[in-house]
Amino acid sequence: MTSDAPLILVADDSDANCELLREQLHSLGFRTVVAHDGPTVLATTLTERPRLVILDVHMPAGELEVDDGATGFEVCRRLKRDPRTASIPVIFITALNDTDDRVSAVEAGGDDFLAKPHNRLLLGARVRSLLKLKAATDALEDSYRRLRELERVRDDLMKMIVHDLKTPLTSILATLELLGDGDMGPLGRRQGDAVADTQRKAEELLSLIDDLLEVRRIEETSIALNREPIDPAGLLEEMLRDWALRFRQERTVAAADVAADTPVFSADRGMLRRVIGNLIQNALIHSGAPIEADPGGASRPERGPVYRDGHGTGDPAGVPRHHLPEVRAGAGRAHAARSDLGVGADVLSPGHRGARRPDLGAEH
Image 1 (tube, rainbow, N blue to C red):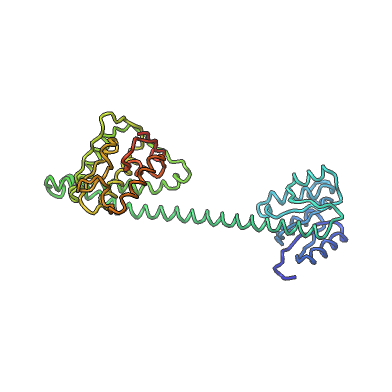
Image 2: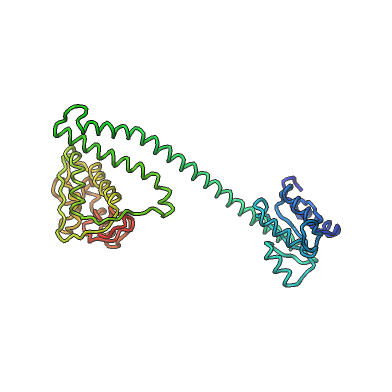
């Protein structure tokens, strides 16, 4: 027997029974420690930390203030109530075969039950089974503790990042406000427009940084959508004004041709602006040539895709021609299945007819 063999506490008021159990357990490869009364069992469990307890029902109660015939039940209840010992398996072993006693053993928190005289092989099988279960439970609890610790580290890191990002950005916003108000000298129309556009983008960035703190709430599905009625034409015109300077820089022709019968819908304006802005940004970044952008084109299926190349082919901008059949086929499948791949799959699909978007809380 090695020194790292599992330690088992044997609790019985009979020296003969204790010695028999010890010999059987030693032959099965386990170490043992013995207790003869209820208070000693509780004290030994805390000091020795056995992997398993084999407990007799009838033992001297001592200061436990219960009948000697129910000492084992009281000891088990106290072990299971104490967080330090709650995970230690308990096997009741007694001469009692009465159903009420078996029920009492289970209600006290016992994990298994053996009647005297017991079989050595059966005892070994029960002990090994409970030890395997305890090892699996301990591993699961350890993984959970590590996960909680990692979550705390992640949350602290995110708060630090948000703080470090907001500090210089706040200074940038203050400087842009001074420039826009003319406190640093007069600005021409083009310079004023550029400063105003930069200030709007910086404010959006500040809002995005604040949203990083919402990650925890999103994971707990407790984030609230700030719904409001949204006019599609007004929203897209607003987006085009915000992106006007970038469009000029990229030589992009932008328009918002929204069908007259497009209904007003309810959605979170901030989230929706973010999604549309990301789509526009992706179109500008991944296009190989100036493009024609029509964010409102999805409301007119006959107009084709939202973003088209500058050659008037009606194909998505920046996509190599040998990949176009795959892109068209994928867009068709996405529309036919009304998939939940994200708003881009619907908005960019030529056959878009409108679908409920749970991620935006909108119907459009």
